[in-house]
Image 1 (cartoon, helix red, strand yellow):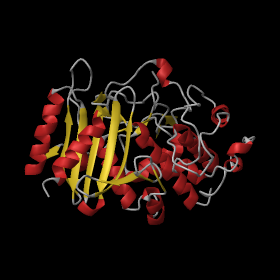
Image 2 (spheres, rainbow, N blue to C red):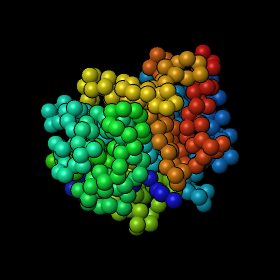
Image 3 (cartoon, one colour):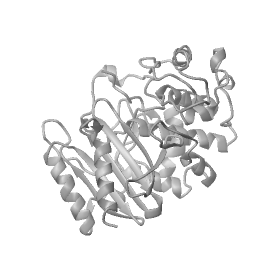
Image 4 (cartoon, helix red, strand yellow):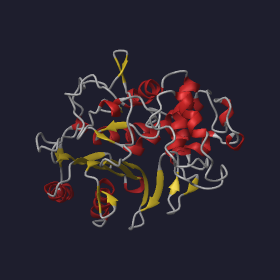
Length: 361
């Protein structure tokens, strides 16, 4: 079984590790259930937790958090409750952090989305020399979904492994989801910034956004402060691995994902023009979703416009950050429960919360 998503980590005290305890109590992380709607949602989620679900949920309307609670327990022994600051692996939501890092470097003139691979890498095979950064970001690069960098510690070796795999299709022709594409994005961020990927993301994205419970796979300086639900402690899984960098490999909390969304829209990380590029539909998926850079757009069954990012690990963890701009609503779900009815539980719960929120309007 392939374990997606894991590697070293945010910058504290000069080491690549996850940041320690927050020094301030942020009201975003304060548990709350306010109003009739929130109480109804809380009752539903409590029933789900009684059936074995573990996770955390945040619902905000008009800039005000009406529900934020942890549900279930932190470990499989049924000990210690999940809280609003319990981290979960967020899988492919990690991709949009790589996309934002790329856009920030473009703003600084360190790269252009029209740059092709030979600007950053030597000996790119002829069939891949025309791949541009934008095609990596919106999954139209034609790279196969082969996880070619898995288990490789060295960046250049990992890139050669990815470039050695035949293309699935010609670059720029059609959508084809690829983790390998975002492994390449992470390498480009390192090369353009002349900074290790995790350090660049931490210093230029996480810190300005005020994210204190978000980091990367690897040894953590203070794991006892906010233990990750069901964390894998096996040393083999803790090793550096380019297959996890850029595409997956990050953990976060429901509050930090909400905080991140707010920071993006407040201009704390990238410009409005870059944010528009991040979220805009540059192509369409096979299911008809608009494909941005690590984000997607669609409509709810009620016709409500929706912009979202989500991820799911094959060991159970998953997360959804869904925004509904016209309704000024945000729904965040972090989860460790695997699949149910062939759908990740985090995805199913977010859709059920969406239905319960918008069917009342």
